[in-house]
Structures are given as C-alpha cells and as structure tokens.
Length: 118
Image 1 (cartoon, rainbow, N blue to C red):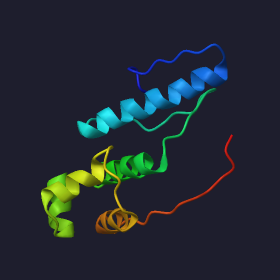
Image 2: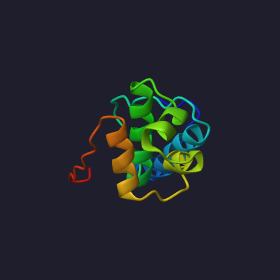
Image 3: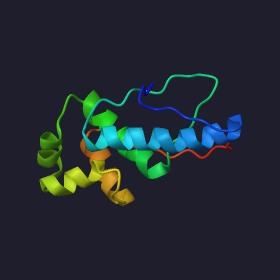
Image 4: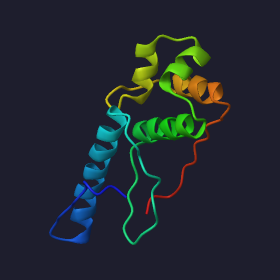
C-alpha cells in the first residue's frame, strides 16, 4: 500500500515492530504534505496506526470523500486556517472535541471501537 515502506528484523515480530514505525512515518509524511493516503488492503501482515494518527487519516479521507478542501472546512467550521491545519498535523495532539466538530461539519459521526489486539 505504501511503496516507500520497507522493514527488516531477525524474526517476523521484530520486522513487524519496525514496520509499524515505518508505516506510521510514511502516513505522517503523506498527511503533512496532504498527499494521497491509500486505504489499507488485507494481507498476511497488517499493522495499525496509533489512535491520534488514525483519527487524522479518517478525517483526511472524510474530507476527500466529501470532495472538499481544507479551505472549505475553514468555512464550514468558522475557524482559522491554522486551526484546521493542526487537525491534519501528524505531530499535533488534537483534542477529541475538535475531531468531533470537524467530522460533524462534514456530516459524519466518528465512533470508537475497542478490540482485542492480535
């Protein structure tokens, strides 16, 4: 899904741990540049992003699905551009109420599901 990602390790568990970090860095880089982030495909080895980065990616996809831009989100939410940019900044710890407002502004609701880790 992310051709720029490679991983290594002395065993699968170590390669997966390094791979998780590599995937997170690749997604963060794409998010920072507002570049395409592909939907994950299924495969033998999969990893998950941390919750903060996951929410940012989901918001990115929601904005894209709505056919809107960050400028449109500025107008929808009545916020300043830097506030909107921080919603997508992979290094900014966005508050949950800000995500909630952004998703609602796009006509969406965000749910959280907890599952047993693989």
